[in-house]
Structure formats: C-alpha cells, structure tokens
Image (cartoon, rainbow, N blue to C red; front, side, top):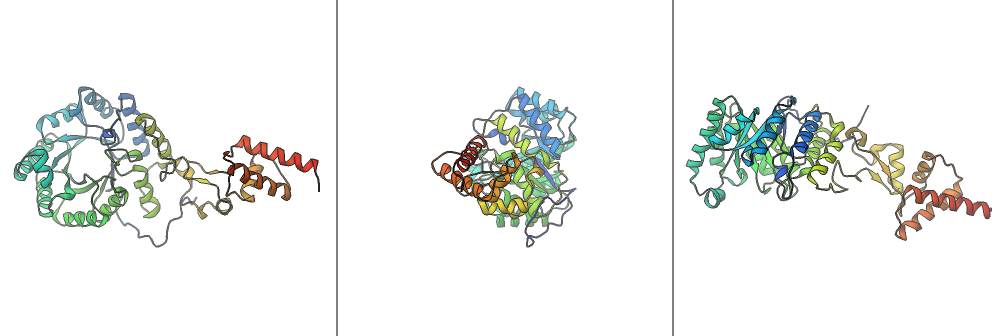
Amino acid sequence: MKWKEGCPYNPKLNIDTEELYIYDTTLRDGEQTPGVCFNREAKLAIARKLDELGIKQIEAGFPAVSEREMETIKEIANEGLNAHILVLSRALKEDIDRALYCDVDGVIIFIATSPLHLKYKLRKRLEDVEKMGMEAVEYAKDHGLFVAFSAEDATRTPLEDLLRIHKNAEEHGADRVHIADTTGVATPQSIFYICSELRKHLKRAHIGVHCHNDFGFAVINSIYGVIGGARAISTTVNGIGERAGNAPLEEVVMALMVLYDVDLGLNIGVLKELSELVAKYSKLAVPVNKPIVGDRVFYHESGIHVDGVLANPFTYEPFLPEKIGHRREIVFGKHSGGKGVQAKLREIGIEVSEDVLLEIVKRIKETREEGTEIEDSILRDIVEEVIKSKQRCPK
C-alpha cells in the first residue's frame, strides 16, 4: 500500500543502507538539556523503544557523570537489545575503563580541536590534545571496543588540522570519525564540503555527523553530511538537547525515507509513541505543530483542504499519519466547509438535508468566531439546535 507522496524532483540517495547508521543520543546529549534528568526507569524504557524502532546504535550515557549513571548504562548494555550500546568518553584512560565496566559495545571519544576551545577551555596546544586523543583511541581498541573519535567543535577547526587529526585517528584504529557542529554554526554546504574532503583522506573509517539545531539546520546538515559521504547521523528524539537541541530523530528518519527515498528498514510505526515517551520522561512538551510528531500536524480545518484530504489524503499530506502511529483529525471552525462537516456527521450517524447542512456550517463559523472551540459536544448541540429550528419553521 502506498503511504507517501514525495516530490518527483528530489534526488535519490543511492547509498548502501546497511552502512548507514543512526546513532541516537537521546539518553546522553538529549539528557544534557538543562532541567532534564532521566532516571533508571526512563532510560531503560527509552532504550527499549529505540530498539523497537530498529536504531542500530544507542548512546546510552556518559559513565563519568556518576556511579548511578554507570549502573544504569550497564543494565541497558545487558538488556539483550539488538542495538549496539555506546557511551561518551573523554580522551582519558579512566573514562574508557568506566565504559569497559559498563559492558558496552563501544565508545565515542571526544576532545576539542578548535582554536577557541584550545585557548579558552582546554588551555592546551593542539599537538598535546591530538596525542591525548590518539592514545585514548588506541587504548579503547586494544580493549576490544568499537571506537568513534569525535573532534568537538570540528566545524570551527581549520580543515588541515581536522583532516590530519581524523586521518591519525583512523591509523590508530578508530572505526568512525565524527564531525561535531557543536554550536550549530555550519551551513549544509559547509557540512557537505567537510565530509567530502574528509572522505578523500580516509581509507577505512566511516564518517559520522553530530549536528546541533541553533539555526534550525540540524536535519538538513545531517542529510548533507550523508550526501557528502557520512554514513552515521547523530539524533535525539524530539530534538532535545543543549540550547536549541540536536537533529530530531523523527525528522531525520522521515526526511530520508519520504524525501530521499531511502529505505532505513525501521519500524516507524512506533515514532509517535517514542516521541510521547520521551516527552513524558523529559517533561518537555512537544509543540503541537512540530514536524512529524506534533499533535496537530495532521489536523485539517479549511474546507478546501478537508475536501481534498477526504478524496485523497496525499492532496494535503506528504505521508499517511497512521504509518508512524499518528492520526488525522478534521477540525471545525471559521474555515470549515460543507463536505468536511457532512463527513463528520455521517461518522457519528447523522444524515441531514443540504439546507440543514449549510445552516450547520454557518452556525459552526459563528460559534468559532465568538471564541468557542468546536468539540464534538458543541457540534452535537449545534446540529440539534439547527434541526429543531428547521422543524419549528419548515419552509
């Protein structure tokens, strides 16, 4: 059954989806949203739902944060999930030892490389930082871990340094190298350029992109990273994270599947449920008009739109909401038309004549303009009043 209707002018991404990884960091970078703290129950529930979706890699946390964090990560790692479990690690032997204690499959080793971070945060020379990073990569590989090396603030690091450091990381055994747009300042063209240049210099290691959403570019930057040669995308459910957040998992997934025709092999029927789960545990409300999972993104009121959707949903929807566990709803108000109202009345078992229908539509518009939302009970009251009025004063 057809479930989506994209743009025929969109390019197709001819990539091996077996090599394309979404590594979700809701439980680590998402939890770094100020005010968010996932307890054990929350982390386990979210990890299980991500696994049900089919996410290949879950970044379960940062063991250096606390003993409780370590124990929760260890429990997730031993939960028997299909996903590989990763954790964040500084370029420190003790952090990697913590990861080993947690029984995880791999580590994302990060260290800052931009002149700004070197001068004001680390207060170290680049060569010293690079040496620390390579020693950490080598130590983690020697202990059998999957290793992704992430240059923090990569998009503000001189390209020649970035290329050399990531090439060096590959030579020390890194399985993947990450381009981190730490403050969301890169454009899609910049991400494409960095990834495509890096791709030329690497022989074996894959490239990942970790994009922040400070300018609303996290999704398109992630996709342009893939176009440029990246094969891993960092996401968070609902886009939660530091400042303006990260690339929203649900938007990245659906953009790739609907707009670029990439079959990710995911169980997308749980996307809405996953969004609600993370909203519940994070206590961060999802905007009603948030792309893909917002409660009202499949609401229709305008008479022209409702008429179209009733005839064929793709007239005003890019994909069927039920495909992701969402639902369509016809809303009544100032912009309502006769066909939408008639369809709703038939749904609740009411048939009316054309003149009664027109009067009902008129009353709906008037009621809404007076400030009352047209809920089902209000609609029934309007219908009853109009029918009684017509019975009292037949023409």
